[in-house]
Amino acid sequence: MLGVFDVSEAIHLAPLVWQPPPAMPVAFRSAFADAGTHEAPCRTSAPLGHVPATPPNDNIAVAVAGISSQTYGALRADMYEHGPEELGYDHDRIYHFSYAGPGGDRLHTPYRPTETYGDIAGAARRLRDQLVDIKRLHPDAEVDLIAHSMGGLVVRRFLATLAKDERAALPRIEHLVTFTSPHRGASLASLPAQLKAKTVTGDLLVAAASRWSRAGAPLPDPRSIAMEQLAPGSRFLGELERESIAFGTRALALGIPNDPVVTADRATWDEAESRVVAPEGWQGHAAIVASEAAHGLAYDFLRDAPSSCKGGWDLWGPRIGRGLGLAEEQSYRAVAAAEQSALGRILRVGKLVIDAASSPWGRAAGTPAGTTMGRLIRPSGADRL
Picture 1 (cartoon, one colour):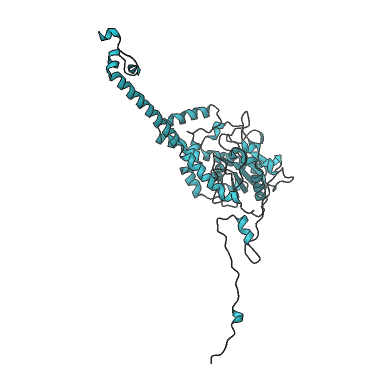
Picture 2 (cartoon, rainbow, N blue to C red):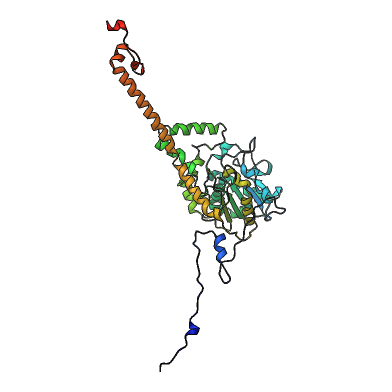
């Protein structure tokens, strides 16, 4: 039998939930989280404005510098000038990798820049040799690897291949931190091949830069094996991408927007926690190793603190990097344009020469082909008689 039903208790207002877009940084999205949501308010990472009183952990720290660095004679290695010491590690628990292999004082053979231009896989084998020695000296210690630029790929190659087969002889690698390493390649490394393929004089420019580099100039040899391996899409990077370091090693990849050498989008790595810090200095590739913001992120990561919230530079840094990288990849066009302009001038001068030589005044004056004086020479009075 139908009757009167009171439905007032079944009707109520539900809160309107607005979901911020995924592209909005966590730092902003967390502001809309309230009681009952699964997302906890994010933690802010503080810049490290001074050397910490205590290290982030009790591990051994091994620093790995990048291409064109050197320790033979003068020191020219950003990672060794602003290395694990600035993160609080004690001096006696820090080792510096050498591209010339372990040996000498503290397992380091002084090396020249040219020794960084070889096969990255060969450098990874030398890193393995050093870590075997560290295991012998510190049998119970774990290791943190802290790398700059190409040094990050040396470490990845070691972890992805060599570390799998020799675990008994090697220490456990607990953390890896890379400072603006070209995990996705470096746009500038593709420029030599483009100059050779798409310009007339580009190969001559590359050859001159190679000779200058080998003579001691502070730039990588564009014809070196390492530069070929750093180019986006190289066989080396393809093989590295198919390998994994997921054997108990946690990784942090740091980038910076104003880096023309390794743009921020190419410093990211899918297998790591990737972060971008605010621009520092006039050239971020060197400045990032001394960045207080980068040190703060690295220190928190190395002490296994909870991940901090991402900010605006994590969103916009890779976008700026993509634009900068695209401009670098197309820079060969400037050389091609200069060649076309020079060729145009040559053709215009050639036409003037031909016109001058074939004119009546030019023929009468005997102006040789290859000059433009025919337009300026008039037959003399004796010639007219």
